[in-house]
Length: 226
Image 1: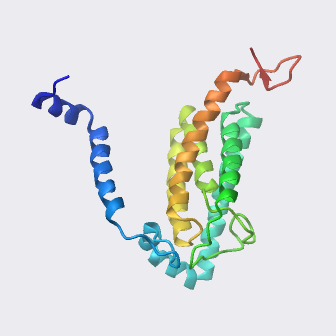
Image 2: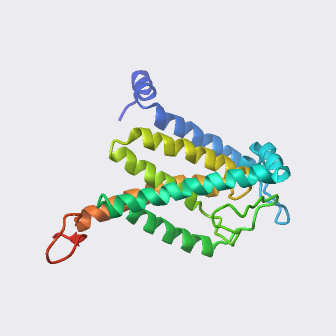
Image 3: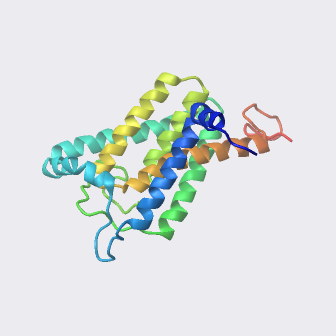
């Protein structure tokens, strides 16, 4: 295979995204092999924490505002839960529910396997979920992943306005969780990926088992059709 100038230009023109990632790969290889490792007795360096240092200061010095934001975030979590349950119980579709089951189970396994330390300057609230500042897994964010699962299902059902609303609220949720130090940046980023991954896996499972929402006189509502 021979490459010419026209071939290179064509790749750059018609495949800009892979080209971008190729350049990014080289860049981060250089970063990885030249950076100074964080000492074992120092807190992790989190770019998201650096970017939201101002918000952490505001929330830590304004308990009422922190409680308000926590309560609103809990309402959003309730919206996610309500949507997934509604889809399953009322619309008779199982994919979002399966995705949530897969996601939270995997989160429990990974969260217990590597128990990250609570970030410094953590700002908790009794209005947050889990309520009462009980212990929780940091890796990865179930809040974010669940919102992604709901948003993806909304897009499949052409509920684009509701999906964009969920995406916007999820962004606000991510900013707040960084500001309160409720999650590390990596927890939130993986939460987005986990939502996409487990939605895809739930779809493949649904297709392989041919789960139907149509009532069956012998097997019940959610039966496996072979």
